[in-house]
Structures are given as C-alpha cells and as structure tokens.
Amino acid sequence: MAVSGPPSSGGGIWDRLRGWSLLLAALGGIGALGGLLLVVWAPELRPFAVPTLIAAGVLLALAAAGSAGYLIRAVSGRRGRLSWVTLGSATAALAIVIALNVIASATDASWDLTATRQFELSPQTEQALTAIPADVTVTGFIVTTDPDDLRYQGAAEGYLRQFARHIGGKLSYRFVDPELEPATAREFGVVSAPALLFTAPATGLRTSVGGRALSEQQLLTAVLTVTGVRQHAVYFLTGHGERSIADLRADGSGLGLAAAGLRADGYRVESLMLSDIGGVPADASLLVVAAPRQPPTNVEEQALIRWLADGGRALFMLDTSAATRDAMSGLLAAWGLETIPGALVDRERSAAGDTRTLAVQRDQYAGQTSVTEGGAIVEPLGPTLFPGAVGFRPLESVASSIERGDPVPVRFEPLVTTSRDSWAVEAAGDTPVDGRDVPGPHTPHLILQASALVSGGSSEPFDAASVRTTLAVLGDADFASNRHFHNLSNADFFLNTVNWLLEDAALISVRARQEVFRPLVLTIPEYNLVRYLSWFLLPALIAAAGVVVWWRRR
Image (spheres, rainbow, N blue to C red):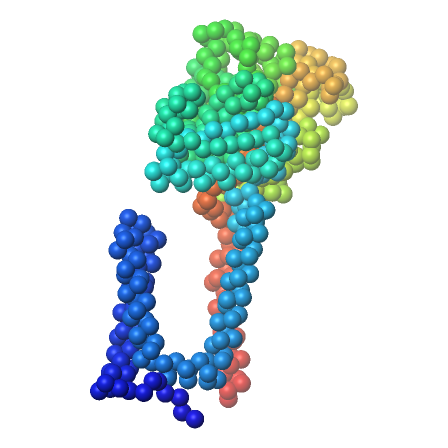
C-alpha cells in the first residue's frame, strides 16, 4: 500500500507545499543554527534569537509536513531502520559520556590523559600537602564582569580543589568581587584583581599570589609560607664577572630565569657582594658561584672557605673558559678537587653536529649514589643538554691517598658521566690528540661532601654523621642560562640540585605543567640511523613491495 501525504485541497496547497519543502527546510536550518549561535555567543541579542528560533521551528515543521510521505518511507524502509539503529547507538554513546561526566563532577574525579600529565598535581606536591600542619584559608578576588577574571577563577579553582582534596579538609576557599564587596577588599588590603590571598589563623601569616598566570609551584609556595615553613635564602655571588640574575633577556647568558625558578620554589634570592659586607650573611642557606671571570681576593676566598667549612652549602658552576677554571681553582682545591684541562668532547652522546654540546641521556645519570640517596636529583629527569662543559677529578694527592686506602675527609659522587668515546680536548677543535688530551669517561657534574677541609692536610676519615660541607659542582653554567634554561630537562636539573642541597626533597621535580615544545635532540649515531633508514631502508621496502605486486600480476 502506497503511503502519501494528506489529500490536496484548496487548489493543490499540499502539492505546492511539497514543492517548497526543500527551500523551507534550508531556511529553517539556517535560522535554527543562527539562533543557537546568538544564544551561545551573543547573550545580549537573546531577545532577537528567541523569535528567530521560533520562526525556524515553524519553517522546519512546514517542510516536514510537505515531505511527510518521503519521511515516512525513509523511516520505515530498510535504510531507515538501519539509520534508527545507528542513531540509537550514537545516542547511547552520548548518554554514557554524559553520565560519566556527571559522575566525575559529583565525585570530583578527573583523568589526565595528556602526555606530560600537565593537569595533575605532582606526587611531591601531594606529599607536601599531606604534611601541612595548619588550616589555610584562600580568598580570591575577581571581577565577575571581566571574562579574563572568570577564566582566572576557573584555573584557580582547578588547583585549589585538588589542594583541598589532598590537605584533608585543612584548606577552604571562596571568591569575592571587590566591586560588589568593597569592604571585604579593604579588609584584606586588596587593591587590584585578580588575586589570591592565603592566610593561616594559627600562624597569623599572610601572603598573596597575583597576576593572571597561575602555577602549581606558586600556590604550593604560598601554602608552605603561611603555615610557617622556613624560607631559605639563596645568595648568588657577584663582583667577579659571575653570571647575573638581573639578566632577563630570553637569549642572554644570565641566570634571570633560573633565579625566577628558585623564587617560584619558595626561595628568597639575593645577590651577594663579598667586598661590601666582608662575609656570607648569617641567613644564607645556599651560596651559588656561577662562572666567575676573576678570582676572589685572598680575604674573600678565605671567608668563603671558612663559611663552607662551618656547615655551608654551595653550588659551583663553571664553564670551559680558562679564566673561570683559574678563578675557581682555590675553592675546589680546598676540598681536594680540580678541573681537567680542556673542554669535554663526546662523539657518542652529543647534539648532532656539535660534539662539545653534551646531550646527556637517562643511562648517563649516576642516580644510585650514597650521597644523593637513591638519585633524588636526577631520578625524575629526562635528557639534558650542556653546551660546553669541563670535567673534574680529585687532586693527585687525594687520588693517591684513595688509591692507597688512606683515610680522606671527603667523598665524591658523580651525577653525570660521559661516554667512553669522550675526551677533554685542550685545543679549539674537536679532534683529540693522543698524549695531550685526556680520554673519558669523565665526570662533568658531581656531588661533594666533606667532614673537614682537605687543603689543611687532614688525614681523618670521612664521617657521614658529621658532614660539614656539601657542594654540587657542575662543569657547565650555560645550561642554566636564559638561552638554554628551558631546553629539555635543564631547568629541572638546576632546580632539583638546589632543592637537594637545601634538603627540600618535597620540591624536587615539582615544576609547572605547561604545554611546551618538546624538541627531538639526536646524538650523532641516532641521527645517522634515521638518515640511513630514510635513504635506503624505506625506498628498498617500497621497491620490494612493487616487485611482489608485479610478480603476482604477471
């Protein structure tokens, strides 16, 4: 039995309607789409959008009435039934997705499927939060009519929700519009938005996080600060041509970005001019000496040695220049260490085309050492890039004592070792000369602990229970410069080293989870492998496939 639309009347009204149904459907679809866009993107035009949607609905209804017979046949036919099955499957899948989102929203659950897990708190942050000793209150100030402030609120709530879950009820937060509640803004002394104000009633401490950029480190630092965690002071030695922390140029050789990273980890960072005050300040937790070009005076050097020998901690960073090696020789010799003449050249583990730029891979980290307690510095790291480094070795007298089994009050532990195809090359080129250049493997980065000065001729054994001096000695300062700080894992290597020196294990590898460009850095053998595979193997496979197809079709 044939199916048709309503009987025509009044001079073929339904016939004319069938003729116009396609146009009516097109106009109705355009109107519906335009009305929905106005509702979503232009709420101020909603009074116009509603009549548009109504008119679109009428046009679609007329188009459906004019094409009723065709629609009935399409729905009841074989293809229609298959379409209903497809539509039902899609609806069921959509319902499952909606249900999962509702459950996740109700239970505050989430899953981060990004490659770098950039939307999750790091395990170290979670560990630090579970040990918070006092309640923390966070008051956010945002202008609700400002779209940028609303986005800021969304990002802040994402972090604070996770913080509250791990602190275990000790953190509460709310958001206030300073324009609607000016009295609250005056009470907290807030003069600009957006901002987050952290307070801890038990300690009476208060700190704020301003600006539109938020990071996990900023919020963790604020929580630790208001709950009474001590803020370490990190001093960068200056006055001898060292790298400057005031240099913020993106392509500069200064350490401005490294200093900013330390501040984000909650440290107070200052410059230190020894000639002005005559010694290291009493509140100094760590001293950084970054590639000086002139040696300190004898008075300054002795002041540094006394401070380090009395329980001081320092980070020494050198570079390949002879001036820096000479300037640091006295400080290194006090603890039985010296640089190997020349710059390190690694023909197996270096950036393609530049054998003096060390491309350190995970298997080159000496993570399991007695000093670093299972590799706290390098265990979380990926590859790192060191554009020009020197190697270190014990002084001959110290090395002889160790070889004879005599006691020495110092312990050296490598952090990074070069490959066996590496050299310390004194000349400008990359070609080593037998008899002059020292073959590897070499140690460009190491940890040193001492229970007494070596330069004083001490013959007492190292006493791990009474360590007086802790040093991290790195053979490259360029890796932490602004130009290279964000290359691969360079930033984490620098910051993790400082965290370990200051015994802030909870902060190690707690870095901003950002969407960053992750370059592929190949060593020379890896580069040659990729090149030869693309030149020979892939064309050979294609040619072989062509021969097989031709043979089968003969």
